[in-house]
Length: 131
Image (cartoon, rainbow, N blue to C red; front, side):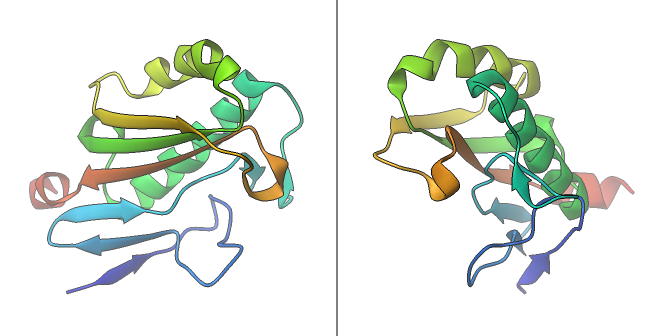
């Protein structure tokens, strides 16, 4: 059974997609960019400022699905400039302490000209069964 994940505490989808989908005890979340949910605007600042906002957004989607950062099994990270890799990692490692599998690539451009985007796959079944 498929179930959409929706929360107003993370940015609304800016296209024809959902924030995430739950299927068979797993969350497949759409990529999050550094948009402040309350304003719909990109947070102003460098890669670390933007990465922190991305992590807040990812965290809210995880929470809305019944999961958390510790249950993330895979991340895909997109950077507008690989020169930001070390600074991005400083923020990333504060949130993904379980060290999930990861891909990280530089791309030509991201939506709204942001500096980073992160998508996650997380386990939710264990958490929801424990409730």
